[in-house]
Amino acid sequence: MFSVGVHLRSLVHPLDSSRKDCAMRKGFTRKSQPDAPATQTKNYITPSGLKRLKDEHRFLLTRERPAVVEVVAWAAGNGDRSENADYQYGKRRLRQIDGRIRFLTKRIEAAEVVDPEAPRTGQAATKAFFGATVRYANSKGVSRVVSIVGTDEIDLSRNHISWVSPLGRALMKSAAGDSVVLQLPGGTECLTVLEVCYEPIAVEPFREPPGSEA
Image (tube, rainbow, N blue to C red):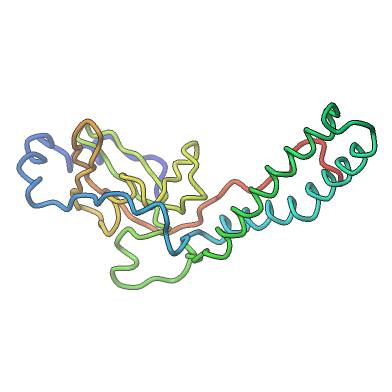
């Protein structure tokens, strides 16, 4: 687990003369790889992330879709459908729901669950892989903590980044003390990995929209 109170000296110390060191080390540090293709064969995800997808899928399939179908059926019996706002809106909403259900179904079927809390040994416990929580610092000594999660779990407000993002790629397979190079549109940035651990990752759960029937 990360300690909350981290002295500034402990963060800055490994980065003394970091800009000069970074320039010298770039030839010896591992660079991040380009993002993976959009069509991935597996959808790596945490257990709580998969639960959120399944909860939304269940809600749409068993609650919201039947309710909208009922409204559409009622509106269809109220005169000219071409001028029936309830009918037109209902049909449009039904297409949106069906599209979302198809998307969720594919993501769930392709899910490859990785539990951050699963026991790990050797390099799997000390290096950053999917599910890791990593503390790193930039060349100015500013530190940040991020958790590496799936593409369906990205939440920047919680510092949850995708494993295929530029930062996720740069940190992947790194260990405490390593220097990595983050590829950015405007250039590169040298980062120093300070700590790697595996702990629970709190993914925002699916919440039914206000007004949903109990």
